[in-house]
Image 1 (tube, rainbow, N blue to C red):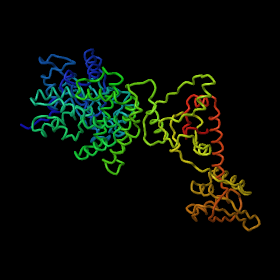
Image 2 (image 1 turned 90 degrees about the vertical axis):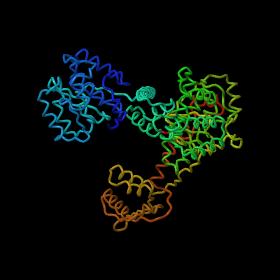
Image 3 (image 1 turned 90 degrees about the horizontal axis):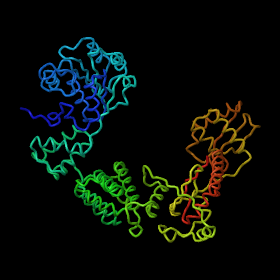
Image 4 (image 1 turned 180 degrees about the vertical axis):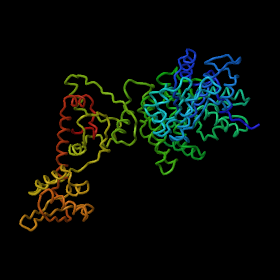
Length: 607
């Protein structure tokens, strides 16, 4: 007899045997018991969570006749009557399964709908299961709408899909929808233990945990990978063999990496990364293990009792949670998540992992500045500096950093004066940059934003880039040329490239006495002075002036162009916006209260 894979052998045949979908089972069982039957059901969910299985059990519940042949609709199919046996075997004539992925056209769905007018042959109900229904074409959906809305009393539609967003709203509104959830790792673990016990196969607890995590919410995937693991291990499930098969990273590696980060030990961190490469372990798997361990550490800090003590690494998570501050754990966790997506961009996977680990190390404060205790009401100074510096330099994307605005506390004038006079540099700034930078440097490095101000205790001058303002010297023809260019742009008579040519040009000569009148422009960018663009600008200029003119475009330095004028105007408005923020009473009070505070460059934008 041929071998039957575990996913098929242990497919649930009753609602009681279905695991992980109690909310669906309860609703369907109550509806069947009370006789409140809908004519169309839609089951949604990811692969391997039981959509087809629920459909078959529902078909048996509707058609079961009981062991004595006298039964009716029931929430507990007997499994021994002819209807139950035939549905399980896939030969019940009144239960039709259609794969919409390969039968998606209106020509293929029409024969099924044509049979709807005929009563069941042997069963109580006809049940149509259309799997992956979102794959049907629009015409096929339209063809079934009327039948789906008012089917005969003996016909039940069961639709299943992994992508309900692609199902038309007209179909969704005609169905009773149930969302089958991904299985929890604990649910998968317990079910695998039950199946393996029934099969008489020895399994280590660690191997089951690895298989449950590898399934990622799909019970079918869990049973399939378990089949593979049994074959790989020669009939037994050993944790080391399963780890080798899956290419999973041992949690001990993640623990050593977190310990190195807690010790701020770059040498140990790189040594552990080299060890991972020597073992051929996945960088993505390493970051995944680190993220999982960091999540356990965060739980251990906030709600220690919620930590699952049955997990073998729970003690290690609890121990490490006391070595890192809460904000540090959150920051490293975010870096681990985002680091996984960056691995494909790195020259190779190992170098990508090393850079992610070094980034984590760079944003951990020195050991001497780390504060004890897992949670504090205020972020640790050093960690706050790392977060603010990270935000200011945009070096690492972090999905969310809560902004906590400290209230402005009124202080005696004497205290304000003393603090303003001290201006003690924060401990994380290098000594050589302890003094405030020159006023001209600060003025040149205050980019933009009137709508929001971020007060940070970092913004080291070392990271500020001085941007030279645009050089503008107005000329007699500058106003005239700027108004002409603006009018042509507003009228939409010039395309993007031609508009750029006009914006970057300086009008040097307008000779009205020439025949035709001559306009001479000067442009310093050679790439803009193509013949085609110059011809288009000449044609647009003729149309705007309503007269024949001759345009000459030559190369050379410029000092008065529409682009320079616009830049100068933006810079003027920017300086006004920054001055408004600098003069704001609340901002001045905050900066007097916190001597090391600075307005983060780039946080002021004019509107």
